[in-house]
Amino acid sequence: EAGVAQSPRYKIIEKRQSVAFWCNPISGHATLYWYQQILGQGPKLLIQFQNNGVVDDSQLPKDRFSAERLKGVDSTLKIQPAKLEDSAVYLCASSLVGGVGNQPQHFGDGTRLSIL
Amino acid sequence: AQTVTQSQPEMSVQEAETVTLSCTYDTSENNYYLFWYKQPPSRQMILVIRQEAYKQQNATENRFSVNFQKAAKSFSLKISDSQLGDTAMYFCALISGAGSYQLTFGKGTKLSVIP
Image (cartoon, rainbow over the protein chains, first blue to last red):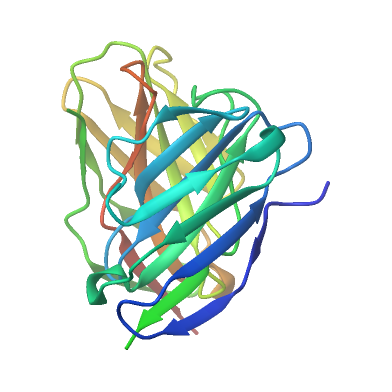
């Protein structure tokens, strides 16, 4: 089966600019996750969708980050305006159902964002 | 809140030897799962092995096995017959039946397999 697809793979922008990332989950996976992975750390959950509804966005900096999952399939994550501390790898993951251990999350290759 | 701690930032092992990566965790839930993920330079997180908390038997997947000590909240990963392709970051992670079942990761251990 095809894995989780993400684009772009790399992005370089200047601070205060905006950027968007795209994710296409594994076909049939109802749950989609966006993680932020800062260099030297483990991934941190930003937002979790169940179909097209938000389950958890408690760690999403809502003043600058937004995400949507129209039609319960693809998702986009946007940052506007970007800050230097947003430099990180943004990982998308999906699972069949919401986050229980017997339905593991499958990850994409991530987008490496560099803020100048 | 749940936490995952990996105390070994870096480790190295000779090819064909055995290495053990350490992980401790904390959660107030009784229903939880533990995972080890591998992240090679390509960045994709790959599930290596998982353990259900209510199962006493340690999980094994080919050359990978875990030592799950529930009372001590310890979850170590043993890699036998290490191969060059095992070189990667290894993350311990926990998901529990609390709220949105959030997957919490440790900071990772960078493993280098030396030929």
